[in-house]
Length: 321
Image 1 (cartoon, one colour):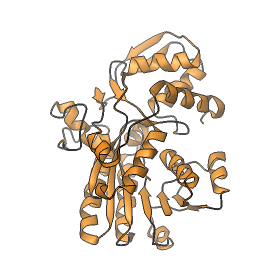
Image 2 (cartoon, one colour):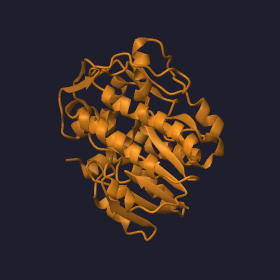
Image 3 (tube, rainbow, N blue to C red):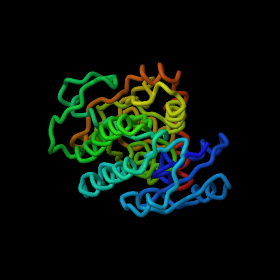
């Protein structure tokens, strides 16, 4: 099988690439390295004869013109993410996320199968407004509760992508699966996500230890489980044309308790200081995985403590700039 990973040098992309290669497939990674890292992890992957790495800007037509077609699977993972990026440069978030999707839609060939990486943020406004239940299924309405909300630039870019892929696939004869990720975490994911951010602060000896949104709840999904869900969805004929939630609904946890877990794994005991959650952050997030289970038989296998330990160990060894 030949797989094209757009944004494949990033967090989920590299884990997905490793899995595909270990399963015996050929992988081409395209990345502009604005967020994805050209590091030792990528070098080890690049050394495999089944892997090709292309440096290219997915917002530029020339990058697409140079890519061959005829792929068995295409994954659009490239995006500008992270609260800091959304707040500091929302125009870049909208431009990169939208242009990457639109160029792919112009380029993809009939008969190919595309995975579009979306996010739970597309329905977060409904949760905040109290009209969307948690755990949350794919059938809930997406809504604009507050167009001025700090994170909406990212959410609207992904909502546009969902609609564009679902409708264009039907019109042009290719297949698409929209996967909405829910708090995926793991090694090599940067420093903006709560688990690596806490891990790095614990490693640096922060005391007191602030915990924004300590009273909020999340259901965290280890990247190995997310990759398994993606591969199962791309192999399931009935998943074509569907929006599917990807996550772990077995261990919903309080952020304050998550901080205690990270600190226990780190072997430190600073004073924990609960703080107000960042603006626009939902009080609770947990996916309903009924559709994913029905389509693929997926069950998450990596427990939160195990996942936090492996993630913490990676950051202890590698750090992060």
